[in-house]
Length: 220
Image (cartoon, rainbow, N blue to C red; front, side):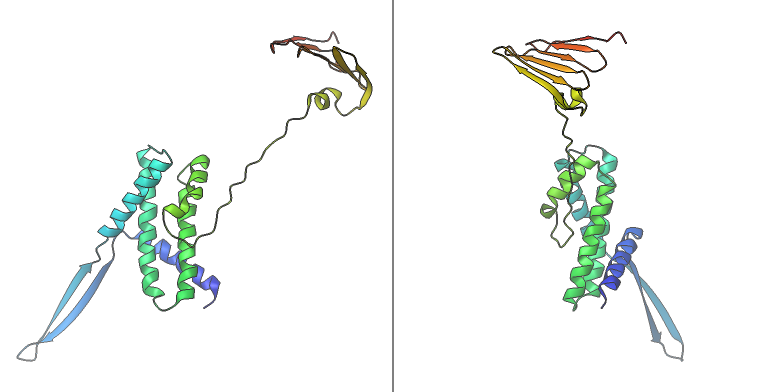
């Protein structure tokens, strides 16, 4: 069976499970009685879903505790997501009873659908924690989620003051180190940790050895 068709079938099973809270089956039996008459009896049976609900509630409680999610609405939505997953898995067990390859692909699709649903319920930080521990909540297969973190490197003091104009002159003595830039800016560092800065626009900044900053704007 084509893999795409398997994924579509799994998604359909997931959607069907999420729309129905219980499944009913009807059995019709026709019985002949003396005199040539017939009686018809229809029996409606409701599939017991208590086990799925209990399992979903337990998993939702565990996830909510791990994510420190105290909002009752979040827990309820998690319960529904895991209940839907349980119902979908039951349908897959029936549909792919003899198709190992098909069941694997369909199970992966159901798990990924559940992960996507959880992402809409919790905040980004909680989702990162959730995906990092996903294997402890239920077995795969599922697509590993990679959460990327963007790190911004702050330009150095010289790069900010010089503004890419280049260094014009360097002066070093026993106590001070001075840098002059082509745009007219200057930086003076002393051994006691203090720094004096003159920007290209004339603004003067002094940072003493304790980190206290004084700013004097240029006249123009």
